Length: 154
Image (tube, rainbow, N blue to C red; front, side, top):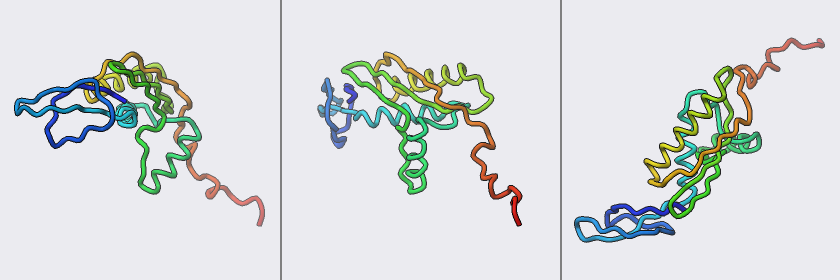
């Protein structure tokens, strides 16, 4: 879980773990805790915003993700694993890139976008962001061409 010290209103509920307490101008103190799943979601959303990223996760995760999308339960943390310490966070992101983008440029963009989001939104130092390009999406591969093929028999 991400531990942060921040100014929080009295009505904000603390989640699970925090390293610090901060007092607001209204003499209200409290702690803020950010769950690991939230950190994964932030990283996943940031990675998806990069041009050239088709999707996140390996084949099995994408298949399950497609089913979840159909029932309205999208997993924004799909394809992202995070390790959260007291002051630092590390992320591993698995992507599917779109053809014909430069894979190095997409990976660098994902690394930069995820690091920026984790620093700005979560408020933690980013130790590392590892990007694995699992696959390349080629437009037309997912089309249902079987319906368009001529029948071989009458």
